[in-house]
Picture 1 (cartoon, rainbow, N blue to C red):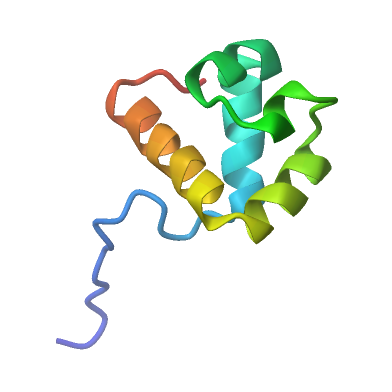
Picture 2 (cartoon, rainbow, N blue to C red; picture 1 turned 180 degrees about the horizontal axis):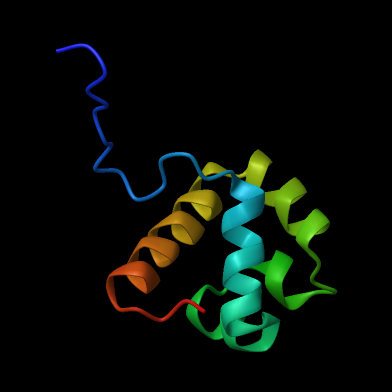
Length: 79
């Protein structure tokens, strides 16, 4: 039917990596975030921009961040 909009089941649909990182940082803070995702961009002088630069070049780290975001959504841990 025309006008029907298929809603994606992917919780990351429509979110940019920047939105995800900012939401996680606002909900957890850098110190708490590094306890859940032990990657260097969250431990050494963390910022949104430096984290994005690292995560865009490092697929395994981006996957960890995205998976933790989905976990946080499922367990209502995001502000």
